[in-house]
Length: 121
Image 1 (cartoon, rainbow, N blue to C red):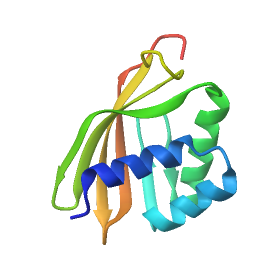
Image 2: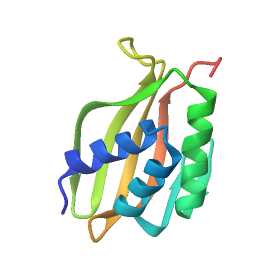
Image 3: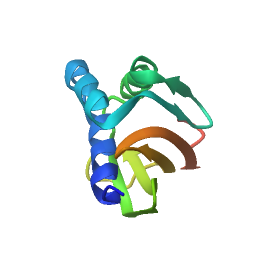
Image 4: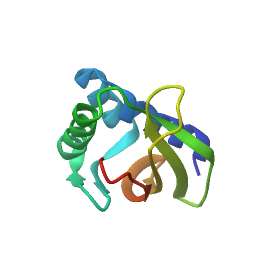
């Protein structure tokens, strides 16, 4: 298994990357071509769908960034970690936990759960 901390940090880096070209590079390096993402609010398939989700979140929350909460862990080809989304230096108003399935050390699927979402988000 690939190190859960490395996978989680790369995942967070992807969601924070504002340059579309670099974001596509990260998707190509760290995700399988048939990867998918789903959470209670959105779903995306393949690099195009996942990139569109990330771009949409960045447009909706232009001053927010993702960061890890706690220590990622996992077993086999599965990893889980929690994250926060909010302004730099402040408590994150949006928090979640993601479950990641890997294939050959790359992300194949993500199932996300929203742990805290303000009514105004």
